Amino acid sequence: MVLPLLINTCDPKAEEGAGDARAAYRLHQGLLKLGINSQMLVQDKKIDDPTVIAYPKKLGQIISKVRPSLDALPLKLYGHSKRNPIYMRLQWLPNNLTSQIATLNPDIINLHWICDGFVPIEALARFNKPIVWTFHDLWSFTGGCCYSKGCDHYTKSCGNCPLLGSNQAFDLSSWVWKRKAKAWQNLKLTIVTPSKWLAECAQSSSLFQNSQIKVIPNGLDIGIYKPIERQTARNLLNLPQNKQLLLFGALNATGNKRKGFHLLQAALQKLSSSEWKDKIELIVFGASQPENPVDLGFKVYYQGKIFDEKKLVLLYCAADVMIVPSIEEAFGQTASESLACGTPVVSFDSTGLKDIVDHQKNGYRAKCFSDQDLANGIIWVIENKQRHKKLCSSAREKAEQKFNLELITRSYLSVYEQARTQFNRDRAI
Figure 1 (cartoon, rainbow, N blue to C red):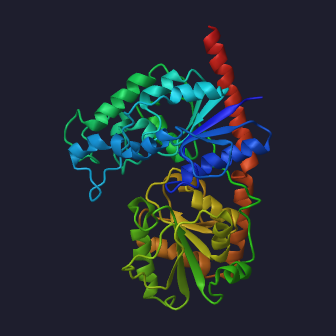
Figure 2 (tube, rainbow, N blue to C red):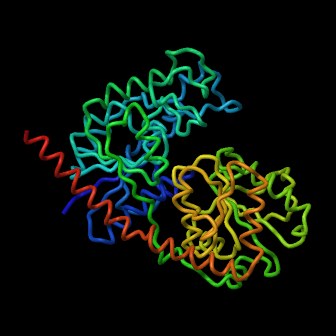
């Protein structure tokens, strides 16, 4: 029986715990449920679970808090500051993570999101274990950015980085890319992506163009994420029964431009001047009400950050439609969670969300990146009760067939076994 070690920067209870942390921890739970002695190693531990191990401990934990800031110091050469953040991860600070892994002695390592200074680029070659790497964004094959905003320099080699505002062939992004190319040139990795789009990006990259890449969606417990009668959910959350409720949510929901809040705002303002003005209200999670709220044309219920899955399920079930207007999304976990709760999703016809939202079957995929068609999609989903009922049924069916955690976990076990077998065969040669 394989003994896996899952490595992610944080667990889902940590302040920065985003979709990658939830996906990794859910897989960890799925393995445990199948009787696999899985362990999870994180830099920032907040969850009360003895199978999740914090590294480093004691004094090292204090150091780990400042590690992301230290890791970002070279970015100051390009104007990086709180007011002008540059979202790149350089991974240049050393640590002794390798010795901790040796102590745990797993059969296989499953890397997940390892940025924010947790796993140095050069450390991978020293693990001396078969490695399965689940990509949760583009960082693994770029010069340090997690999302490239349309830049395709990673298909050759990075440099002249638009995120850095650089017009130099040798810049910080080039340095990071060259470190990866050197450190990983002889490293045999098994790569998993949660969406076809991310697999295509990785396959087009200069670092992984010759790699075999497997697509396995992020899984979720469909026994937890399941439909609850809409009226009941609204009663429990003190939400109105006589309105069409739209739901939008993400980590830093209103502040992260990649999540598309500005496009949702434009779509809602169009709807607020239509016959739907008095029929719609909006729920937002992942952000608290700002001191000076943006006028969205409708009443808004801000829920703040939510770590309680039961409340999250109630929100999905209370809504008539979930809106995921992301510009770039490696997968789009809020969309799969919503489908599992029987709530249709409106998104753009873009990136990882194309694997989740089936146009006019369990939601609506709007033209990229048209706020008008986003508005059209919202109305198309909610305007006809019979059609909405079919969309809800199809949403749940898609989740049962594609995102069931047990099925996803068994797919990973198959990948683990193949990777371990190949690693032992190569070592015997």
